[in-house]
Image (cartoon, rainbow, N blue to C red):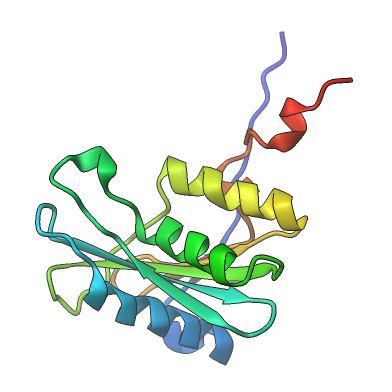
Amino acid sequence: MKSISSEIKYDLYDSSSELETHDRELLEAAVASTDTAYAPYSKFHVGAAVLLENGEVVQGSNQENAAYPSGLCAERVALFAAASHFPDVKIKSIAITACFNDSNELLSVSPCGDCRQVLAEYEHRYQSGIRMILTAGQGRVIIVPDARTLLPLMFNADHLKRD
């Protein structure tokens, strides 16, 4: 038997003001997206903004449903909208943030397992990592280089190939 470990490396910024302009603007678009969240049950408003290789920004917000599994996370709303409107354009980055109700306090947030799997699918599709810009609470920001960092034993289309 072997014991193998995995390490997660990411960049932590004390403030969004430390970010490069394009990252800060993408995060601001994600913050703006929280205003369109439909979250009457959890009151947890999540916003996402995707930056495409062509410079387009596509936004999404969480959409809840009384039948909880029927709702959709902000990340997947933004990713699916981007792929639908720009099917052949690589996704460069995604910014994700959350707040309760209409609070100005941005919370620590990370994509759920389903969203990590969808991010992994788009990385595989475009053969390119997707940077994640995440609010980390107390004004801090985390930048993760790609989905593999958050989902190291990911499943993708390569697992479906037969020899």
